[in-house]
Image (cartoon, rainbow, N blue to C red; front, side):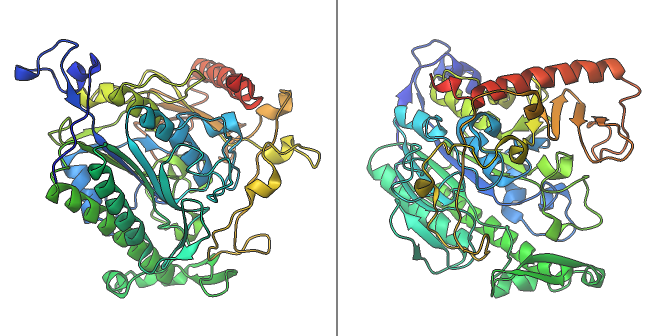
Length: 509
């Protein structure tokens, strides 16, 4: 199989490819558009990979990607839960701008996604696996198809073994096999078809693993037979695969299954990388992996490296694994401590493919400048905000999308609100009020991170940490740097005003 050769002309390429030798340095030079694969794990925390020093979990493929490509040591999910983070990757915008506040809140149809941008550049686009920013059924105005993907085999939420998925919005059906392997196999089929069509491809592959409830293949479970007995002394609550209800189990047994899922997901990523290499596609394919939020409470060990967990704005809730391979550009192993976030993906791909950014506030930045200077640091702040919709919207709130279009169809193992499918919501927001600025929020600037309304005792509502020196967020520096706190708080407030203005819908006018 020969690589596709679709070209474009941009000064940017001189930066990406160093413009030496026969490649030249003028605007008329032509460089092949890269293929793009974006992997995302579900509830996969920063320390749950071998390359970050985890004592038990086995991730040989991600470890190899980290060793051979570009490793992001400070990569963040835009939110400490899944749906909002996924919306940020698709749009380059903080999810509060369009009402994706927490899991099961949908995106808005007017948002512009990476799939829509890359289709304009000539890409074949597809989504596989977890969607969770709206129903995947055909009539949904926020399905993968409605948001720019040519095809999709997707689930409204997460999935386990033998996943029940909807193909291009049709009625869901079961596909036999390990969940991660199933969606990667579908991705390989899509790649083959895109090559036949002589198009570069964008594949967004979002795993259902390692979200609870957990399960694993016998060979993967066997890898974790020898977890410490001390883990058996702790009990955790999670979903039963048999009933869909909450049960209490030994943490040791839970982690054995969770780690088995991570290893299976890692192997599936390896299957795709092997396919790319065997078909002469590896050199100019950008492959990236990241998580969508930190480790959940049901999988938390006492010796976790970072403070906090899923649902927190502490490092353990938002710092996630982040690795990128693109041999044509990143041809030597590298690591960067630059603060980077899922919102950066759209601006990065827009610059790489020569597409203009949407004409609306974009919260991410392009990471392209860091591909040549791995020591470069971010100058723009990164903001986080756990909006409190329950304090803003009451029973009289008007739906942004008709409720019948927000009903999901793909069943999952976990029962909520008396059913095994998911319903989504999004409400109209017309007036900015002072009370709407509440909720836990944070700004990260240079080495400092300011958290407002956090959970640390005796913090008086303000927590300032030097993340470079104190990644565990143990020493609150607010009394030592009062002027810095004041400055960062003002920047955060100004950003919140912009976000709430977006939420009113003015960006779409």
